[in-house]
Image (cartoon, rainbow, N blue to C red; front, side, top):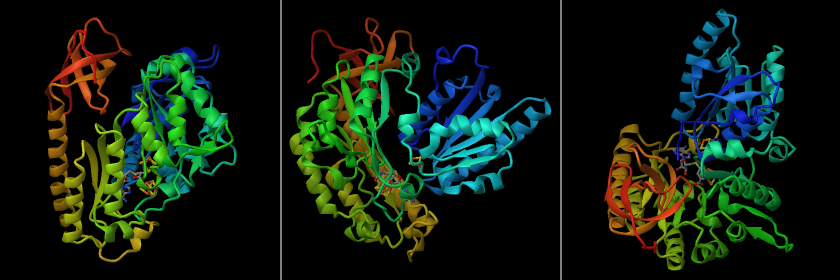
Length: 470
Ligand code: SAH
Ligand code: SF4
Ligand code: F3S
């Protein structure tokens, strides 16, 4: 889930005649930030910026930041400290280097970033990326700009659509944000404060963007939202559509072979969405459905608004509809007040679900969230110990899941070249990275392969002749 990415966009889209400047975008945090970085890249392309993967040759360095845990925010300030020296050196040579901070730290800290880091020119929140070119123009005139409004206008309406070349440069899989923000207010979480209230993008915008992606060679789309399954919009029939309805519609787009979505909240998994898993071949059998904890007392204190038993019943219903679905989740250990026996209940829940993959974290106090003010914070060494126990159980389940795939014939979407000549790397339906020698196939193809072995982070496969995946 966490990622540190440099987003390439295509120089081909640089408008003729515009002075060429180079932008380096560093992305922290979740997939929504990866998507946003790409859209900021598109907005900057129309201002004459071309992407670079060399920070040293950039005229603009943009950090797209994450505020979810204390360490995530600390990373940003230490990166800014290093950039300060780089900017000084560049300015001493009479060259420009602008520094921008975007994303959730920008939203949460605003002016404070300018105060702490004199080298920062622009601070821009997630709702106002369409105003980035304007903010940079003002900064170039000597202003230090902070724009962290929850803009009234729809940023998606104002951001330029990516051109074909830039979509191709990004590959055969793509993210598409359909929903932003969160109204759930889990007591540990900053997202409702950094991303604002839940907003769904209209159906037409989503269908247009998906069609454009498919038309440019994208084979797999992952729909994104902080609460993606809370997506709601008016359908062409005048009814309110939910994510399930949207998936049925997207599955009709020619060329789009695979659909995924993340991240879901258990409370918003409705019948239609479960039916979509049963009916749609394009909808991949993988579901990231965070539960955070297995104790009802802790779930209540976290304001998750469901019990452990309800979560397990929900998974039963999902598995009844789609027996081979792989489950993924997020966990927090050491939430304030969590006792040994609460933690044991988390382990029991993990045993009961049997996850194919999962993320787990030590609780990190976020000032301003209700969790920060709760009594009985758990000592660090207890958190460390609980995290180790939980992670070893989750890793064991993950390894068992990988092993259970050996011998199976599965469809692989080929995404990129492997390390060896003739080798390609693709994704299984269950999101595993798979290496295969596939000399006659090319990136973007979906081919049946037989899984023949497991590695630490990936699987190995051989092409099958004449066999089809089940
Ligand atoms: N919207 C998603 C998750 C968003 S944040 C959901 O509802 O599940 C991604 C993950 O970060 C969360 O699922 C949670 O496990 C973790 N997380 C969020 N706040 C945290 C905190 N204060 N300390 C530790 N982990 C946290
Ligand atoms: Fe955070 Fe909870 Fe909203 Fe997820 S549902 S983004 S964990 S407040
Ligand atoms: Fe981080 Fe913001 Fe995503 S806090 S996890 S980048 S929504």
